[in-house]
Image (cartoon, rainbow, N blue to C red):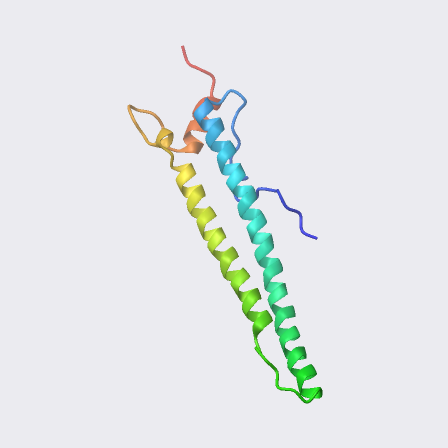
Length: 132
């Protein structure tokens, strides 16, 4: 059993408790996407194992049909289903990576009027005590 709901892609940055709301909101969104990405990664690993089992099941179906004196039908039915799930999860991961890129590049992150233009820069800026 795999552990789900743990965001691993976005563990290198932390935000201070007094971060501006746009920074905190972006951080929550990136963590939400990170959890979904991690879950999809775990499901993809499981789907890879399911593909191996599906291939074995297809071979066994051929053996069973041959032993019964019948012709095996749809020789790769299980493999096709398992491969379709792998392709679906691969697409999901690609979409989540793009979602993270877009969430991390929100309009509040773009430089304007001297503001820092990246999440780490905003985090560092908000973590420093204010200067008089």
